[in-house]
Amino acid sequence: MEKLVSLCKRRGFMFQSSEIYGGLNGFWDYGPLGVELKRNIKDAWWHDMCQGHNELVQPQGAPSPYEMVGLDCTILMHPQVWKCSGHYDLFHDFMVDCRLSKKRYRFDQVRGKWVSRGEQKVFVTVVADPENENDEVTRRALKFFNLRSKNADELTLADSFQSLDKLTAEERTFVLAPDANEINTLTDPREFNLMFKTYVGALSGEEGAAFLRPETAQGIFVNFKNVLDSTRVRVPFGVAQVGKSFRNEITPRNFTFRSREFEQMEIEFFCHPEQSPEWYAYWRNRRLKWYTELGLSGDRLRMREHDQDELSHYSCGTADIEYAFPFLPEGEYGELEGIAHRGDFDLRSHSEGKLDPRERPLKLELNEHGQPKHRGSGKDLSYRDDLTNERYIPHVIEPSAGADRATLAFLCEAYHEDQAPDEDGKMQSRVVMKLHPRIAPYKAAVFPLVKKDGMPEIAKDIYGALKKKFNVFYDEKAAVGRRYRRQDEVGTPYCITVDSQSLQDQTVTIRDRDTLEQWRVKVDDVVAEIEGRVS
Image 1 (cartoon, rainbow, N blue to C red):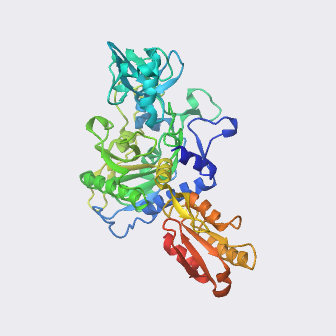
Image 2 (image 1 turned 120 degrees about the vertical axis):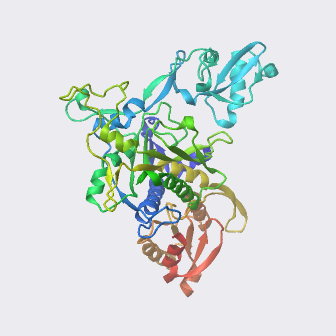
Image 3 (image 1 turned 90 degrees about the horizontal axis):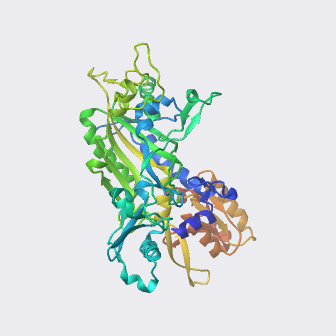
């Protein structure tokens, strides 16, 4: 993972936000290559899920034909949206503070091991790389018990790690916090709402309070009627959206995996309640297939159905597509995308509101009947089938993917180290990013072998022709072998070299990044050759 993070900065995939001022934790900037990679992933998602989903012919595996449309909703919305969606009351994580170190941690992310010495025991927590966690637990336990390394055999370590949230209140009194040298320094866990609060207009009080959206989905739900009234879509249909979301994470970590500003690629798919189980199965299969077709390995990718106690209060079923990111301990997976069967919860909440008397009102305002004004919009968000005249509230299937997590997963999967011959035929180590051609930042690179004899002119003509179709790179600096290495390191699938033979027969050499195979193609056929291989 350290090598990948280093490459991302060196080659311009990602930089820490505001780096020259020391950076801002949980925020990342995409560099010249990173912005191309992420845009290609979003474009592939939009084409495959929305634009090119084949709405006139039933897609393979779908229960019936369906349509897809798009939306781009605002980041700031009426605060009542978040009240009725449940985010204002329920969208929180639990946090703990260390009274000794003054540091703050997310309750479910502090992990450690029980360590015993005779009758004494302590739960040693660590913040370390997964492969070094056992060593760090032993080091901290030795220090706590005032022992030297040669006395390590006096300690007994538990077989497996546990999360802090799995301990009882009594067990938590034996916790050695990650940055403390005494036990029982952590506070009791308490709620922390993850929404960023801001103010709209000149009023800085609660009258002008608003929130940066924590997800893109709610903008689709509140526009449900607008989409129906302005288009000719009929249930079943989906609404796709790509956009920024914001969550004030307590402890952002693991590169771009958990950030405070991130981009989502979400679909809200509206269907008849009786058909919703079939559509849930369809979207689970389709979304998993999308990742594998773009190069994520089957053995590092899995689909995991949520247990009953994991489900949200409104969910009829949820499955996560998970990836074995290299920063996670061996055998553990991180969420890449969630596919949720949300039932009719969202449309019903935004029309009727939520009537739980235990909820805290966002603004304690009453209507003319003396009732709280936070009980939904009062709008009818049901659907009437114009063919059968049946009226119902559609069920919703939500495939929700993170563009940043997808980008990170593709980068992790692409990173390889192998051997390749240099100009003299000697095998040299190389770093190669084996990105799928559809998402690679550059589709091809064009090189003149030398900067003379008319080779640059031919190469620039080829570069200009390709540039009309793809993002391509031109390079005439350094030996051609070194230029190959540079392109391998940024994931360019094809390199095109103009050499002395090109001057004689108007052909060029094309080199494949992964197989290192080389073949010659007529100059006039280069664009068609690359276009065919990329698509």
